[in-house]
Amino acid sequence: MRCKASAVSLHYAAPIPIDIVCALSPMSESDLPTLRLKPREDHRLRAGHSWVFSNEVDSAETPLRGFESGQPVAIAASTGKIIGTGYVNPQSLIAARLVSRDHQHPFSASLLVHRLKVALALRDRLFDGPYYRLAYGESDGLPGLVVDRYGALLAVQVTTAGMERMKDEIVDALHKVVAPEVIVFRNDSAVRELEGLDRYVEAAYGRAPDTATVVERGARFDVPFSAGQKTGWFSTSTRIAGAWRATSAIGPCSTYTATWARGVFRRHCTERPG
Image 1 (spheres, one colour):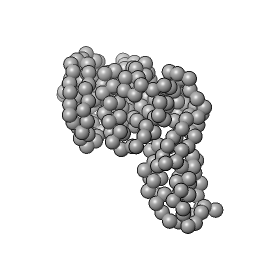
Image 2: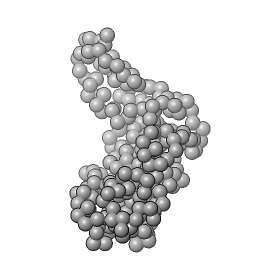
Image 3: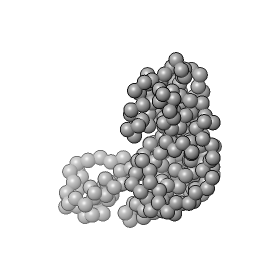
Image 4: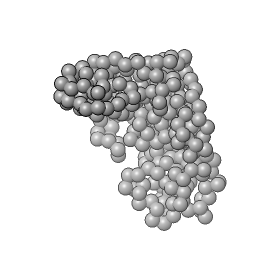
């Protein structure tokens, strides 16, 4: 099925005026195994949450041990009515994560492409250049996936078994949406152990440099792309740092990447950190 939309409205964001052509899979949730919840345990999901805890699962009807780690599932209320689709991990306290509430378009490779297109359109509206967090987990409808963009370089962090299972599909989706020169998986976060996953760093495409360049508000920074903390840069703090730079005086402080300090100095502060 193909669809063309002049505006996209998501349950986690305001409508985005874009022109996106999306190719979504015709598969439905009936093609997936069902994870059923206990009575009255569906209220959080219906209120907008996306996590299912292990004690909320009806283990008599759908035993968690009967599922594979990261397996795509349809998530149902105790009545059997499907709430949406996502993936399950019997080894984790967070037993399942809801990815799609659209019964026609469940969690799949084509949905990854669609969600990344929507995320890219939003960033193109908010940022002057291609230096930002392209995908930020649940806030972009992609739980367990973080993608930081440094121009043609992408640092990807997967923190859940469901997204780990979709690694090849994630790489393919990023090629279709961004066409990067380099993709590196920075899967060395300790939170992966809660999902029963190993920790590693891996170049999925291209040759990863030691550093990447970030441009923020006219300032250029060299970022530790392959070996820095997390995905190398705290891009989620960009707007906070920008507001702080406007101040006229700053007291003693410390900064990891220097973006805050350099931004303040560029504003010619009357007092400098000691």
